Image 1 (spheres, rainbow, N blue to C red):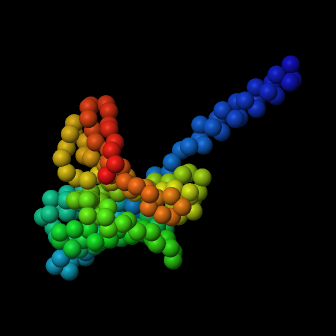
Image 2 (cartoon, one colour):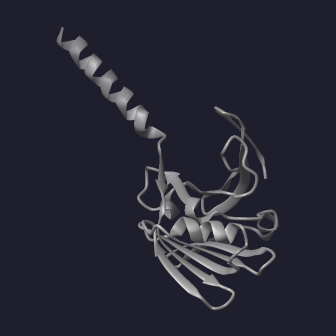
Image 3 (tube, rainbow, N blue to C red):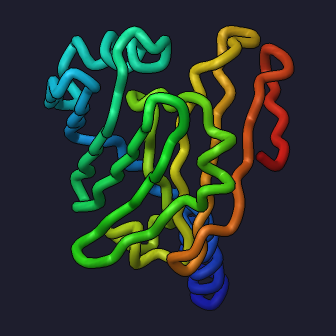
Length: 180
């Protein structure tokens, strides 16, 4: 009887350990710094009620953004630069390390809804840069289908860009992905 209890206890522990093995950590920005064409600088916290308004005005081009800096609780900083026509760079930084989104991919990105820009990585690490993989995910802010915006995932493995995937809502309860 003792052996059965021990075996069941071990199975129970292994079962619960497996549940958490593949969970991703999702980090939302804690602060946003927007630099606009007229040299206006706006700094917002994630809890500011005006954040959604600024992000919508950026997507709809009512405000002409030059640069956005998003700072995360874990220390990562995402800097996106825009020349009025195209994104010129998206850099993810942590301390002295930088990772870049390739120019070929930048040319395809039309809009970034900054209020939805999340950093996602394996929960095995406290910091995205120490994880074997991480990704940026955000809404593109273009056509709404079934009240959901297309979502772009920019994927990195071992601190190098791997690919981009776009997710589109195709039905009320389903999404479809394709290479970007």
